[in-house]
Length: 273
Image 1 (cartoon, rainbow, N blue to C red):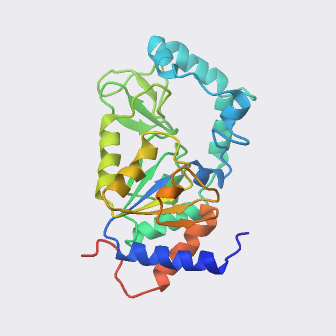
Image 2 (cartoon, rainbow, N blue to C red; image 1 turned 60 degrees about the vertical axis):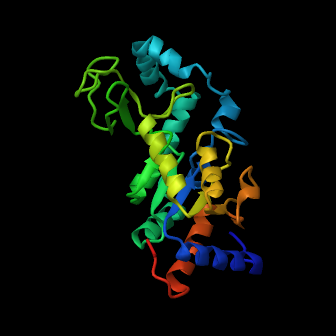
């Protein structure tokens, strides 16, 4: 349980005041938020790549070389305990949004938060109810066509043949999750960049700031004059750039921040002139 010290309380008050004065607030969410829902991180203690080894940087090239073999292996490994794909699938299937996710939804609904850019692929933001959202690394529960970029939920999709083909253009379908060596879809990257350039305040929620291009977004925002508020139990590479640092789990910090936004000051939230 987080101890609410006088220093943390003062920082929460300052963060709430900055958000209330901002016109366009964007949250950049990272793996720390998902960890609080029971999803293992990729790096660090207990990380999937720490246990099983980091995937090759040629993952995307391997998929393109033989999409049929990739899909066949995918279906084999999804039911094989001891495989990182299987372990992630089980964790995601069992995970539920935590209080941090729901606090962000409340902030959006009440006009304090205009957009969420998430690095997480677990679909928990959608389940919690986030509407204005960009999934920079894709969504593990969705599929994407390599040719026309059409996206659709994997649930209910009929894999009559492998590799699956797009029902709109006939292109090859892959998981929506961005692979190693795969470019982030241009329209998604552009939209994320636009949010970084538009915001005057960015919340850094559970992100270590080590994976580009997402890690570059706060720097872009800061260089254009935005305020950065970090929410993380640990110091990160982005901490020196931040105006306010709220040390603690996002699942505990965000509800506290939401409470102050709802009950402090007289400013009207959202798109203030």
